[in-house]
Each structure stands twice: as C-alpha cells, then as structure tokens.
Amino acid sequence: MGNEAVGELYQSRGYPPMSHPSTDPAATSVAAWFAGLRPPHPGTARILEIGCASGHNLLPLAARWPGAICTGADISGEAIAQARRRAEEAGIRNVTFIAADLRELDLSGQEFDFIIAHGVFSWVADDAKKALLELCARHLSPSGTATISFNLWAGWEKRLPVVAAARRVMEEHGVDVVKALAILREVMAEHPDIIGIIDDMLVKGGDILTFDDFAPMNDPWPLDDFAAAAVSCGLRWLGDSNPAENIPSSLDDAAREALAPLVGDPLRMQMTADAMADRTFRSGLLCRADAPLSQRMTTGMAMELAVRPPEVRPSGIAPSLSDFLDALDSFRPDSVPVAEVLEKMGVKDIPATAKTVFQAITRGHLRARTEPVRIARGAERPRLDPFRLLCAREHIPLVDAWHAPCLFTEKIWPLLAEIDGTKTESELSEVARKLCPDLAFPVWLRHLKERGMFQ
Image (cartoon, rainbow, N blue to C red):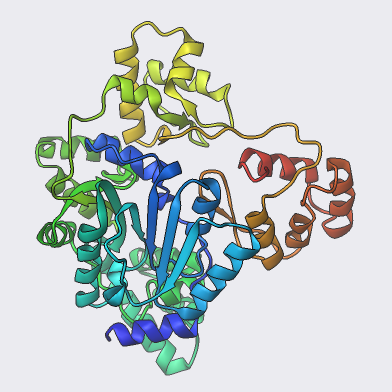
C-alpha cells in the first residue's frame, strides 16, 4: 500500500488526540545538550510539527510558550480545521496550521529550531520518508533539532507475523482488530512470547492500533538504516530524544555490562541493545550535518538542568544519588534546577555531584528538562487554563505540565468542566459528591495540582 491508503485513513478517521512527552522541546533539548548541541530556548523558538493531526501535541506547547512561533501541518484537512477551531476557542494566537501532504509542503524558506514528526516516518512510503528528512535538513536552524519517531526492526521482526495472523482472523470472522487479537490470544495460549506481544497490542486499544500496528503501512527499519538515510539527506543522528533511552531502560545491569565493550561505537551499541530488548520503537533526535557541535555536557550546564525524581525510587543506587534524591524530594512536585538542590544540600564537591546527576539522567533515575516547572499552590478557586478547560468539555486528554496526557472516565469529565475558576474547593467538592459520589475528591484534586493542571 502507498501514500494514498495512508491519506484515505487519515481523511476518513481522525487520529486520537494525544500528546507525546518524548517530543517536548524542553525535554529533547536535554538530549541535544548531552550530544554537544545547544538549541535555542523553546520559549522563544520556532516550532514545526509534521503530522500534527488535530493539534493536541502542538497546542499545549504553544499555550505554554506564548513567545514561541508554532506551525503544524497535516494531510487531513478535517483535522487541521479542528486544530484551528481549538486554537481560536482557547485563545492561542501563536500557532498556524496548514493542511498539506508533507511532500508538497511549502514553508517558503522558513527555519525552525524544533521540528517534530511523531508517528509519521514508519507509516508513509519511501518517497515521503525521504521528503521528511530532506524537509528537516532544509528547514532546521543551525542549532535546531528534529525529533522523528519510527518503528524498529529489532522488535517488529517478531510482531509482524502476529499482525498478519490477526488480519487473517479479521477477514475470516469479520471482526474488528481488538476482537481478532482476543481470538488469536485464545488460539496461541501455549505460546507465552506471542501472548506477550498480543497483550502489549491490546493495551493500546482499537483506535491507536488502527493507526499504528495495523496501519495501511507499517515499515519498521533498523537503526543504522535510519541513521544512514538521515546522513544522506544532510542530517546527523544525535541519539534518542530521551537520553535515558539510548540504552533501553528495560535492560538490567548485567545486560549493560555486556554492552560495555561497544562504548566506542555508540550506534552499534544502541543497535545491540535494541536487539537485546526486542525494542519496537525509537524517538530519534537529529540535527543538521553542519550543526555547531561542541564539547559535551559540562558541570555548569548540569547546574542549569531542571530535574525531578521518578515516581518510584530505584533500588540499589549509590549513596550520593540517594542523598540527592532526598533533597530533591523536598521540592516535589516541581522540576527544579540542579543548582537549587545542591544549595539545599550544601554540596562542596560540585563536579563529583554533577557526574552523579549525569549518570542518573542517562539511567532514567532523574527526569530532566532545560527549564524548571513551578507548580502553583494554594489557589482558592482552582482553574484550568482555557485549552485544558476546552479539552475537559470535549472529553479529550488533558496535558499536564510535563506534556504527558491524562485521560478520565466519563463521570469525571463534567466535574473537570466545572473547574473554571468560579468555584472554591469546597464548592467543587459538593459538585463532585453529586456527579461522582465514589470519588476521593481531595486526593484527586491534589493529584491534578501536582501535575500542574491549574493556572
């Protein structure tokens, strides 16, 4: 199947609204810093998203950074119309949406500091893949980065036969993809590896599976082929957009030790790690081939990074990191600059602590970004910002301060729509008692506050 089938799918069915934390420029900039490149601050940057659908990934970024200039493009005219409507209703003025095939997209010599293409590369034909990479090389600013996700052959080699088998079940029984996978699961009950793949697919749900695993085109590539294609178009592979995922976080210490001899060949090491983990997906970070790469992360740069701890503290960590996490816990739920944490600790040996921070970020023990997140506290009348309030009224995911999507049950949406700044917490509690009598309202409201949902 070619681009026509892909276009027909996106024109006939809207891609489910979703934000993608792996594309957040404040987070992807950390990976760029680790690779020796310093993009402009996102707050005043030029941001382009290819395949923006109805804008649910781009609009929260535009709302967060009113000084940025944002552009979204998608093949679906209906999705673009929806994105424009939501931008207008939410009062987001710094974003423009374009309906166009990426092969015909005219950006009139513009340069962008951040280009995002999530869920595009593996789902279009080769000429569109090439057009995407060439567009990035042509329109990236000298220090700009492109975040392009793609499916990996390392994990998909085992998954594609499952997709083919499920398609046969769909045709033979006239059922949808979820039911077909459920039938296949019963048939393959004695094959735990296949059951694991099916269960992973079922977690996504039918809407996502239609555009992902069971899309008209799903073309997984080996990592080295993707990197080579990028180089041929004038780009450079910097690594994963999350530095903690260059080596998959699912690998244990023994696996990481086995990879140590490959440390001098990062691409080969990452490919080997992908194979060990049966990895299915990457969010790659690219820059122009002539980008001004300099020395890697310095102690001073580490002091600027804003960090927050993981939800669950990892076991077996070094005492120095444990002390750092203890101090960082006092700032929850904020993401704060490393320098603030060290000041609280009274650290004297800053370079040694910076090394601990570097290692913790690359292992996923710290979540880093290039700007802090300060959560508002103590508002007498909680209020969702205009875009989140619009999302609540339309029953689509709310995006938190770290660009992660948050879905709610049908009973909760009307309650969220009441959080418009006109009611006190006690008044909202009364509304919750009527709409959702089983909801632990104080805990739920605190959770929303900690995710930075309120103005």
